[in-house]
Amino acid sequence: MVIVMNNYIISLITVVAVFMLLVTGASAVSVTIENDQLQSGQSATVSVPITVPATIGSVTNAVEAAAEANTAFIQGNARLAQMQQAYHAWVVPSRPDLVSIATNARSSGLKGDGVTDDTAALQSLLTKLPSGSTIYFPPGQYRIDGPISINKPVTLFGESGTVFDCQKATQYVFTLNEGGSATSTMSGVTITGLVIEGPGIETDPAMIDAYYLQNFKVSYVKFHNVGYAAIRLNTCTDVTVEESVFDNVYQSGLGYGVCITDRSTRINIHDNFFVTKGRHGVTTGTSNPNLPEGDYIQSVTVENNYFEEMTEQAVDAQIQTTGPYIVRGNVMNNCARGVQFWNGTAEVTSNVMINCKGGVVLTNENVDPNNVGSKVDKILNNIMINMLYEAIDVDRTNVLIQGNVAKGSNDGSGIYLEAYVPNSCNIFGNVLENYTYGFQASMPSPVISLINNYIWSDGSYQSF
Image (cartoon, rainbow, N blue to C red; front, side):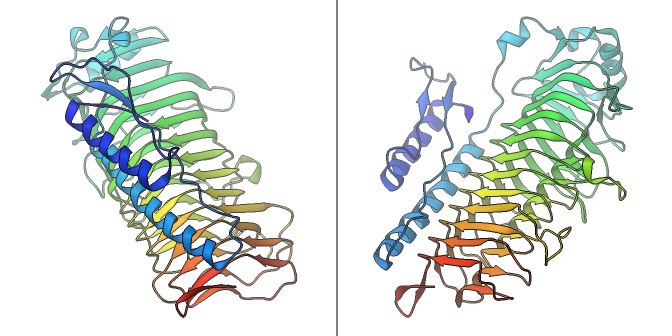
């Protein structure tokens, strides 16, 4: 993760880094100041790699289980603090490399005065410029009521202080490749360095709505006070959403930071912050009830993001998902659930979930419970602290559950298998605290393998 910070924040992050090194080991975090000749008041780019805490999978006795639990809980809380510090240090970086080649929006008819609606002027500029153009929005408040249609490859970028004020929007604001199809795709749109002020929670407009778009990138954009969705990706390929903030994106029954639909694939969502309030930070699904299975969403990776106060699951996959869906190295804090997949191949690994009601839920609703096939989902090396319900709840899939450490609320089961018949179910090296049962299965099965799992009970760790 790359963040622009002043000297105070750099010092603060350095202190946090030293603390992380003490509690997690030398590989846990590194901080690199790329400009080491700062003068007072200047900014620097600080690289803060968000590394994944290494947990077990190989405990063999109660003593090792106790040590592993203690280390994991320290790591999990330290990682939460690290993510929160990174969020509060987030700013938009300067891009002099782009300024030098760009068309200046303010010199091309936009006012940026916070009063004039710049929608028509921006649409005119987009129509006039050739494909591949770069438009620079100097700091200012650009009122964009929308709608804006982008039907050619362009780069839109701003700097710290550049705001798109969409508070009066009643329609989707930016629609990319509207009317696109499998034979009418578009490639090469970048949106970076902006704050987008939405019309408020419980409102209908999406801020960015993309169709059949390839090589699409959103970076260093803050979406604030949005209802239905900040970003919708409809049949899009090779998309990166990175280093952005989704702040207060919520609508009852809806509300998505990033909504991925209809045969989208190779979607990479990393190093973002989903904060204040949301329903789902990231979701996959469709509005087409007759979508054929061949058009389901495919490869999605959600990595090194921070989620807080999600009223439902932070990362969600609806039935119209094939996968693989990788959720790796994220931090979920005060969310209803960390991860819930209704379908698709899942790999949920090395995440930290704290103060959530539930951890990882795999339901696989499209699967016959008596014929689950050969797919194997993986839930590996996650740290879960102060969970209200089950840490892991699995239905209708073969599964490897290994190396997870979880602390519950003195009730229920840490790991629960619903009523189905797996072909393989391997549960290895998990350590649990504050659960009545370490493991429960609604149906007995000879293929369930429990090896080197431990639960804190009656004052010591005991195997289950």
